[in-house]
Amino acid sequence: MFIGLSVRLFYWQVIKGADLSQEARGQYKSSKITEAPRGNILASDGSYWVLRTDAFLVYVNPQEITTSASSIAEKLAPFFVEDGEDRQKLIIDEVNRLKGLLAKKDSSWVPLKDRVSLDVKKNIEALKITGVGFEKEQGRFYPEASAAAQLLGFVGKDENGSDIGYFGLEGYYNLPLSGKSGFLGGEKDARGSPILLGGSKEVSAISGVDLQTNIDKRVQIVLDEKLKEGIEKYGAKGGTVIAMDPKTGAVLGMSSSPSYDPAKYWEYGDSFFKNPAISDSFEPGSIFKVLVMSAGLDAGVIEPDTICDICDKPLKVDKYSIETWNNKYHPDSSMTDVIVNSDNVGMAFIGQKLGADKLYDYLASFGIGSTTGIDLQGEGAPQLRKRGTWNVVDLATASFGQGVATTPIQMLRAVSAVANGGYLVTPRVVRSIKSEGWKDSLNKDTKKERVISEKAAKEVTAMMLEAVERGEAKWTKLPGFKVAGKTGTAQIPIAGHYDASKTNASFIAFAPAANPKFAMIVTLKEPQTSPWAAETAAPLWFSIAKDLFPYFGIQPEN
Image (cartoon, rainbow, N blue to C red; front, top):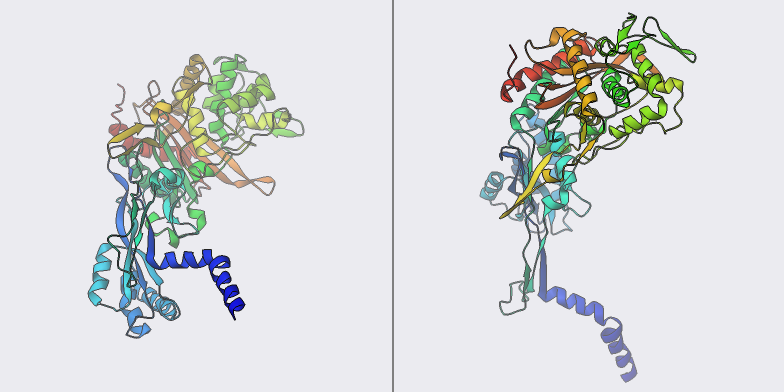
């Protein structure tokens, strides 16, 4: 008996000692991770895009409820369903969901609904339902509703149930926005009450920083409204508009459609969360000619008045024939005429002068084939064909914007180098980060890299001015305003060939041409009223500009 008792004591005190000590500590010690308040996101004027708010998790202890599950579900469901046409049907569905949760009798804590407002909490408390409780958590309030949704992103939950930012600014700046969690530890008696003289430890949570963006609310709302109108008017499947300061890279507004409501992100599919402005690639078509023309002028292989001696007919390249978009040919065209007429043969002429490797190097220096470094989560970068592998057909088609792919933000960044005198800048959404008592500007880190000479930039700007004044989109221009721009219509590659009936229409421009206050790109996916950018994307660009010009103080000349 003595040996048996000794063995048993050895088992409990030595072999199981550590486990039992841990269980004992769990009975008299308590600990809790305290969440840090998440930072706000502000517009350029300091007003709120995203505001942190107090919210509450509604939970129930099924072992404590004294009324039927059906009764509780019917009382709570109306508070968990928002107003709408299908409200009654949604309430019935919610009642059934709650009944299933309340049936978990073997559990002492069952979450019913997260992120309910303070008003909803008070209304539920007034019902005095035994077993129903609340835990404080954080919510996000969007004063401008769904405006700039894909730019902002949203806050969801990770696999551990903690808040985490997804997409846009919420995803890219998740760590500084989240702050640092705190810790609260102490001792408790058998009843669970804290022991005042017991050892306690508290580490305060550190709040997340606030982000002040370059996004101008007036600009953003104009982009959102006008893009929606344009998509409906031209029957497009979707579209994107980005406005940026070409000198600093400050993003003034960015809108894409279709979009979603970040306050109810769970009601939308994953395809809505991706931001097409930075993630979706497309063949740019004739807006790409601005970059190729810039390369030719900077390299010195052409001048603005260089004559194209092959522009009188289609150009035979290998077994293919390069034609103009309207099958009209312009013998002895100058390089300015090539841009004004959006002449594919003339652009192939420039490509031949440059050669494949030199054109590749210029495109790479413009940032084509690499990410821009914009501070948003989810940026994509379609790759250029490897240097040295381009054949004569690749060279010809790339010269007029087919056979290469870019994103809208890549194109705007590249053309902004023409607008600002030849420098490539990094697009920035956030201007500064700040917290209580300090502020740090992020614009000081903006780097500029010269990619073309100032002379070449001015020459291309003059060509783009002529394209707006004399090109196919001249009917859309606003009289008296000096806008340097270029249309682009590109067929969409489908299953290894180009679909002649499906196009992407784009217009990219900056104003005023001599000293631009903004550069803007408009893209429309598969417009139905017309395949041509001159009849869809260009008029939408000028419709937006008509509202932006007075806001930026841009006056007509003469």
